[in-house]
Length: 438
Ligand code: AMP
Image (cartoon, rainbow, N blue to C red; front, side, top):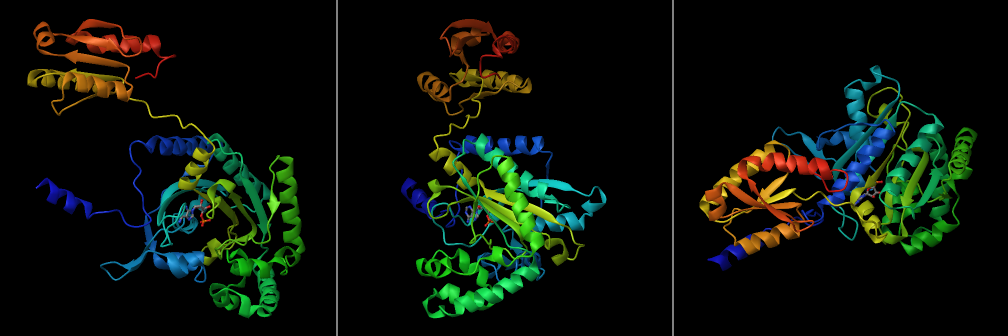
């Protein structure tokens, strides 16, 4: 019977490209999520939460038909009312949709927003590339000031550093305005046309519709061909070039090392001027920890008025992976303060009542319900690293007193059931500065 159960059970596996974050690892996620929240608060960014799915048209309009995301990677389905909906593949278009739909522009002219959300992309899974992953992202909506570009880069840098990551590289580029790109694409197409037979199949397909994407192809042949191709920085307007030069100067002023990378065109159509990416050598092929840029055209593309904006997003899986490779020690979640060890039905019942009373007073408490031996319960309490255990057997029941053992110094004493809570509260007050607390 057990064998059949195991067989049936084993049939259910998680879908390819997804992951379970187990209790043994969740503290890393909590640490990173809390760090993001703290830094966002310091920088005055407000959290925004948008739906997990949106109408498909939002991404077609907001991200662009020719992008890999829209062309190949979206989880799109028709719902029961015949509407085409898509699981969110990226955060910026939904945030901008929410900004416009809820007329946030009426509240103030500049919004600093952030999110932590799961993204869904039907990509070929590999190390660091999932079909469902989590991103945190920040957006400054409603300003074309160059300070917004710099602020976002500093914000990302601060979050990475608090997670023990300072060995990243920042790559930046400018892709100018739409008209600059039109001009540049024509020149690039002409150049690439000379090598069309040597390009990869993917790049051959892109040459007409999205030649700039060929610049970030990973194919060695494509890389060789594009090494000497015309560079976009030579084709952007004076205004965009001046802006880019000021950005580089401000980064230097703020001690942010950066490399100019002509290949950094980003996959999304709505970018204008600044693009940037944080990469780490510790990540292998999928080396981007985060990236972003300006998207002054997005609001208009979604039917709103022109709203200059800049944003970036970063994958939590990759951030945690780089932090671990750097040997960063995430602070662990607090263990329960006390473990109630009970032997026998009546003792279990008493322990359960006491435990709920402690929990009602915000004292984190736990116990076993599976009739384990005293030795095994004590072993478990030890493994959990609790501060105290409280032992109740038949003898203790009859005396209405249990044995309270301090797991830090191994001292123990008898405590009346009725006095346990007050005793723990006062012990905790005494040791608050040095111990793990309640
Ligand atoms: P993108 O919107 O593609 O620039 O993604 C922003 C960040 O999310 C990247 O820099 C990665 O850190 C992360 N990311 C993107 N796609 C994936 C994926 N499929 N799996 C894990 N992380 C991803």
